[in-house]
Length: 386
Ligand SMILES: NC(=O)c1ccc[n+]([C@@H]2O[C@H](COP(=O)([O-])OP(=O)(O)OC[C@H]3O[C@@H](n4cnc5c(N)ncnc54)[C@H](OP(=O)(O)O)[C@@H]3O)[C@@H](O)[C@H]2O)c1
Image (cartoon, rainbow, N blue to C red; front, side, top):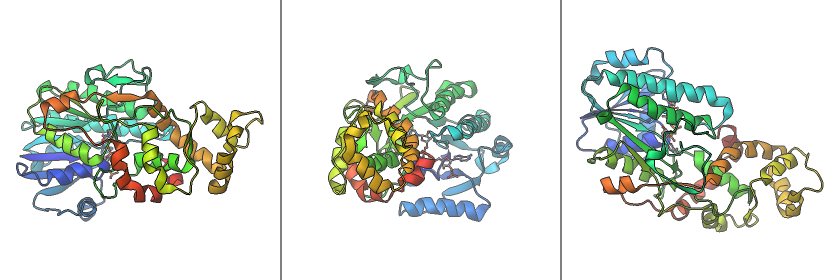
């Protein structure tokens, strides 16, 4: 069979591509790649395989140059003779930014881009499965501290913390406007962070938040909030196993379920001792985030509670040099704190029942493999596009 994948140069898509390229039942894999020319497109795929220390089989993996923003993307895919017998489309490309300044871009990519791929998929005679890589965090912000089941989303009435989750939710609804149910498969990963194996993770996105909390040490988060975090290798392996399993449902959480979620306390304990020159972790109420922002602007009233944490304020003055830098970091961290405080765990019973997948290792156990990488993350750079 032949497969078409979008987002193969990304964190999740790259992992999917490399694993799929070893699958014996797959003859050819075509990857939508943003590139200037063919040489550049091959170089980008080369980079993905090099990163994984894996062999790039140029007789099996082929780039298809294209951008989800191209107005003629659907027609160029329709007209491409090499894509006539694609039986599986995996749509992993997305703009995952939480930053408001990218809202338009997020919508254009995640909704506009998806529509272009679906327009092509709809007329593809050979299509058996359209696998949409969604996200579990589409339930919205109005309910907290409980387990969420697949059938509870999408819900058009949900209020979203960021545009990104809204667009991913909307994307799931769009699938049904273009394709019959028997061709739709939705895999909804929870939060993907790092890699469970002893190797540097490809994307610093979620790790950035952890590296930032680790640097700050005084953190406005409930220590016992539940966080549903899985490693990227587990996410990709589970998605591929799901794709080739006999399924009873359209939508599956790729998540920790109730057995292997973690908490801020456990996660920070796991890394605390590796950065022993920093003060011990101290968890404070989320409402203190505002006081931190005011302090960073030198606008905090003298009677404020935050002054009770002098040790940390002194430490921040030492490490941030210009404390105004803390404002940039806090702005980037805001949505992550909001998500953590929701304390959502995504039920994974359907995945465990319908496939051979077993529960993931909790993040507080596998994160130690990423310690050296955490220390190298530029928290200021990451804060610009969280
Ligand atoms: N990471 C997580 O924690 C997480 C959790 C749940 C679900 N997901 C879902 O998993 C999927 C992959 O996420 P990720 O973390 O791998 O994101 P990522 O590392 O940012 O990768 C995004 C991919 O999409 C491609 N892309 C973006 N805009 C494009 C455009 N205009 N045209 C063509 N390609 C474009 C990127 O190509 P370039 O290399 O050219 O930029 C890249 O290959 C997404 O659908 C996301 O919603 C991720």
